[in-house]
Image 1 (cartoon, rainbow, N blue to C red):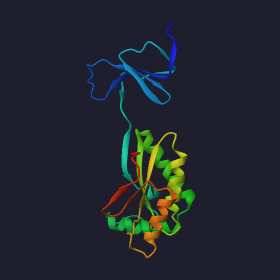
Image 2: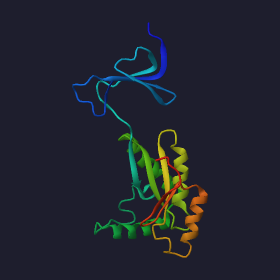
Image 3: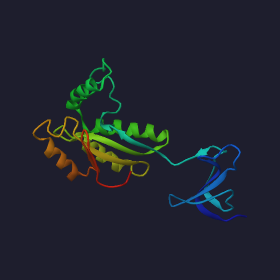
Image 4: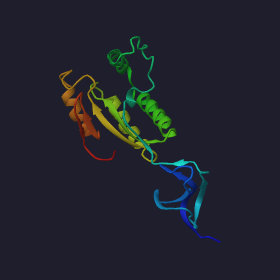
Length: 196
């Protein structure tokens, strides 16, 4: 009888780029790492999953989303023109009544939707031109909350411009102190780490 060696073994996997005529493979996982890929892995896994010839691929990356404003369509009103400029104006109205719980709930719900479609790496912008920095604080807490199943990078983004208010440059600096992973303005982006 084969010995149990791996925590998970995926059986009969079709790899990216492999046509229907190419043989499937087994994939062994140990400590959350792929440790073997072979046409047949004889050792057993604590958990065995029959993929039935379906595609197995690396997770997708969402490189630009605004989780702080996700799932707010129609709040406080609909974008009648369908333009970015009206959308920004509506967000300016909406962000006046943000709460930490509101930001976190919508962000986690959006991340769950993304994960269900294979997205496991997300870079989200947080509007740091509102004086309470509620959006940034919320997304930083969400980053910690979802770290076991999603890699979230939080970008400090002064939606109203760095010089749109006399305090915005100070808010941007405070955002970095609070733990933002990167900074982005209208035409620049500075990564502070290389997680994504």
